[in-house]
Amino acid sequence: MAQFPDLPQDIRSTQVVVRFGLRMIILIIFATFGGIGFGKSLTTLLWMTGAFSAIVGIVRREPLFGTTLNHWDETAAYAALCCLVTAFNHAASF
Image (cartoon, rainbow, N blue to C red; front, top):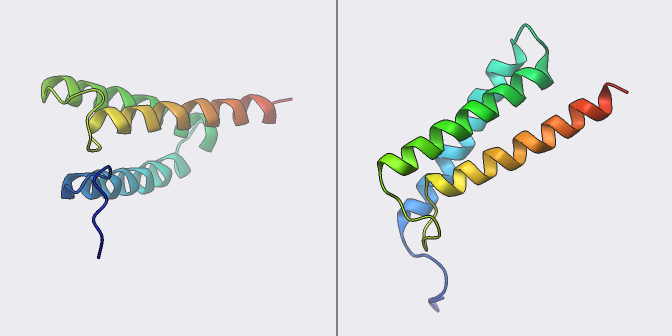
């Protein structure tokens, strides 16, 4: 089987994707039981998780634009999802 030199061959990228998926499942479960509504709870949880991932990336001194996925990529994904959920919440309020 051919190896693609541009793709990261490190197992850590797979671990990051699995970690992201598990965190999203947990966040959705907690947001479901939030007292302020699902959308607002999910937005808040995504914001806090993104901040936490950024802090972990700083503490672990992970490269910002590395060849493997890391906490900075998770931070970007949480920020994008937070913006998306905020836009849906804003559109649904009209």
